[in-house]
Length: 165
Image 1 (cartoon, rainbow, N blue to C red):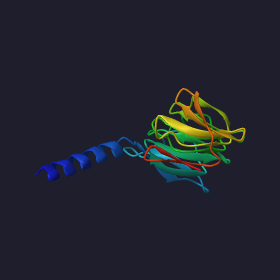
Image 2 (cartoon, rainbow, N blue to C red; image 1 turned 180 degrees about the vertical axis):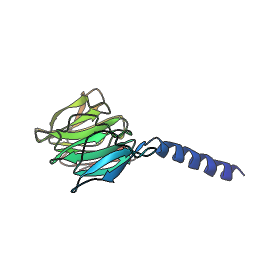
Image 3 (cartoon, helix red, strand yellow; image 1 turned 90 degrees about the horizontal axis):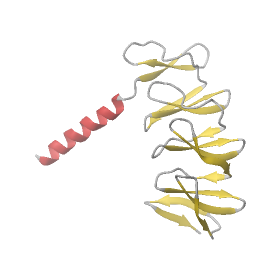
């Protein structure tokens, strides 16, 4: 009986999480897309996008004229449409590329890690790894380099453990 209750609770929670997304994508003239409200079918805003991706952690990646940003559950951009690339938010921080350098933004579009890295990993834990000036670093959420790594290659984290050579 406990298993049935647990499964029901998980399904209820999952449905509640996904129901927080208030908009869906609708194709419009040409090859562009627009967000409309699920409940009414009315346009969420006037933005037209060249490409949209699915919602992950409450946000979706979108592009216009080869520049990217993310939109929230109401289809509202979190920042100006200015990034060369963006990655999904994990733990409320997402990597973005600006002027050929990587940094991180928060869910309000504020820069939290400066755009000075050649490579940066997603913030799935308390720290992430970044690469600049031919060195690898561990960086915390306050953008402080907490450790310089003496490694040649950093493959990311797996289960909270760095995979390095």
